[in-house]
Image (cartoon, rainbow, N blue to C red; front, side, top):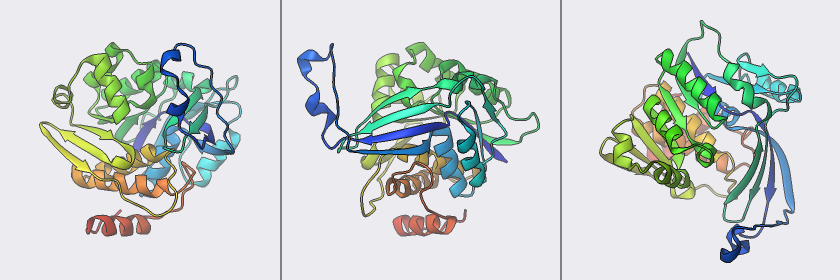
Length: 312
C-alpha cells in the first residue's frame, strides 16, 4: 500500500550567509527592512516538501505516492524521481506554469529565510491518485490553502489517516483555517516556531489540541522533538553525528521516517526514533534528496542510538 504525499516538488536554490540574520535587524526599523546578505556559497538541488519526504520514505522501504502539480520545466525533475523508483503517475503537469521554486538563505546558526514561487502547484487540487489506488496513510504539507483542503477532504472521504505538516503555511493560514485543519486531520507535525504561530492565531493550548488529535509532534532542530499524546509528552533528543550540519530538509526526512514507522504499525516511540534517525542522516548532507543511505545503514544507526534492532 502507498502513502499519499501532498505538497511541493520544487527546485531549491540554497544560499549560505556566514553571519547571523538577527545582527542585521534594527529593532526600530522593522517596518522598513531593506537588507542584502552576501552569500559566498550557492547550490541548486531537487527539493520541495513532498519530494523530500518521498525520498526519505523510500529510503526506509516505504512506497510514496506524490500527489501534486509541476510545470513546463519539470522534465529533469520527473526523470530524477523515476531514477529513484519514486512514482510520478499522480503528478500533474501544467503546461503554462513553472515548477515551484524555493530560494533559501541559511545563516551560520541554521536560521532560514525563504522566498517561494508556487507556480504549477496552485493547480494541484486537481491532481489525485487513480480510483483503485490503495492508500495506507496520507500527509498534507504546505501548499496553497485550497490545495491542502482539497487533498485533506479527499483523504477524509476515503477514511485514510491524515498527518498534517503545517510548516511554512503557518505564515499565511488564518486562525479559522488552522481550526479547520485541526477538525479534519489525525496527527499534527510542526516546528517550535510554527507552534508559537499556531498558539497566537488560535489561542489554543497543547492540551486542547491533543484532546482532538491522535498526536502532536513539535520539532526543535538540534534540540530534538517532543511527542504529545493525550495528557502525556515524551521528548526525543536529536542524534549527534560527526561533521558539518545542513539543516535544509531535515524536517522532511524526519517526517519520512515517521510515516514509515506508522505504516509498519510501530508504537509511537519507535516511530519517533526512526524519524530522528532519518533527520540525523539528512543533516550530514547538503542535499534534501540524494543523501546516501540504505535500510541496513538506517537499522545500524537505529541500533547504535537506541540499542534496539528493527526490520524495515
